[in-house]
Length: 372
Image (cartoon, rainbow, N blue to C red; front, side):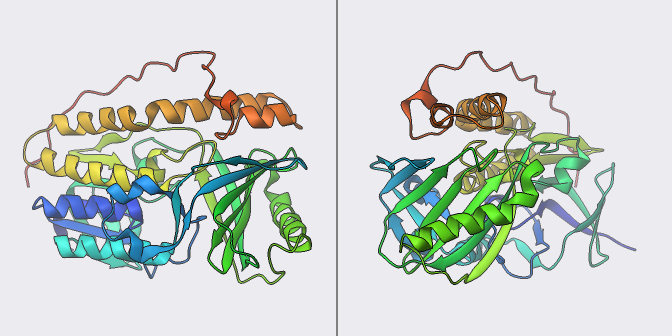
């Protein structure tokens, strides 16, 4: 069977993949981007909060936003909340947001296909899609989430994950803060209430070892907030998924003569403490697409530069979060309120100097792309 030939194949059309496809196509590359979902962003598998600064990377953000956020409230066990302000951000309609980014990729010239995934990714870079079509690409960009098959093909696997469960519930009073719930009863994670105008996303994340308890943890948090009169008892929607919390992976490699780049959650760019990953996905996706275009033009150092730029942008903050998370895990099965605070971004203790410098990163040397 003959194969379809592209310069760049992007696996995943979430924020990272859509931005990578748009950037590479805008630079003139022949781009195919695929996603196993039937529709962009649906079903939603995140809490939908983004920091205000993401507006610098995404045009037209306002048309995808549900409401503005101005502060964060952190509840430690049963204590009164601590307010962090300003803490500006936006709550998204994630389906609309992803569709907006995909449409931008299509306008740039990318061929975006939904309901299609990678069936096989061979050691020589050859790809067979789930619809049976064979694809040959000079560069593959893995933006296919925390359990990335592209990352696995080059030996880069997110081995530390948090499992999440979220329900959408009626919000009974106007609220403009993200509420965070820290407790020893939420092992390895935290609970949240994020408002979306007349509704709210309410959920929790835990270490995989406690997955069996997760449904009950979310139900208890829901019951508590309903008893307080803050939310309704009806569940409007339920979702969940995994978040990588082990820190960055090596975001590049080779399969035969095919160069591979990773972006977003596939590259381990979610914050190990907060789980936030949309802004990093948007930025890293664009950088991956640009790096691919430069490499196709003969500038192979762009692949190394991509890794270095991710490290410059995210390395320090993700390393701090990883260390704080590990400290919390080492504190034992029931961390104290003081230990919970030290592991959360709202408190000064979180920003204290780390106990050890992160190890130096050893980057593999560049090589040449096969001609088209």
